[in-house]
Length: 201
Image (cartoon, rainbow, N blue to C red; front, side):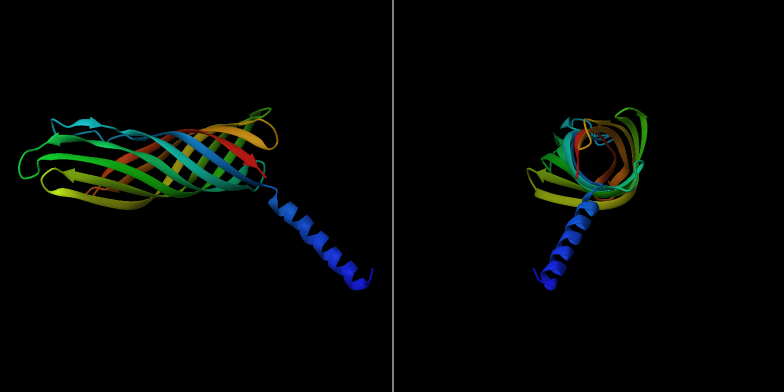
């Protein structure tokens, strides 16, 4: 073995070790739950039926555990979709119906407070950019869609249960504030109740 080969092997070993150290602390998570637009069906016009203010939601997240008590997390969430109801409002609109859908990108700081072996309370505070889309359909005028993106502080509280040092289960309740636009999509207070699995790398 010559000196150049020894140097190359030493460099490869160094970078392999460094990559392993850097990978420690990262985690991924998948959450499934129920979103709620608390006032989507409030103050509807008389005669409106079939309005839904809840939907099935899912979220993909990735984070880095800075310390045993603090981490930073980024996520993409689809909060699902539901009907805003339908009604026959007469000419010139006819039968009017519509649906709502919400998605979001979020970055948050997460605090973890152990309360017993393998069980922790978690708190989350971050910024969520939420897109609310409303599709409308009229039997006489055709269809239209409007959307609005709002960036709001989001907060949540939850619990984490460590299965082992690589897998954990978490449950969370989160509030994303009022999303949408009063003049286009309308507004609603969006919340999420979810459960998910975390995988530590």
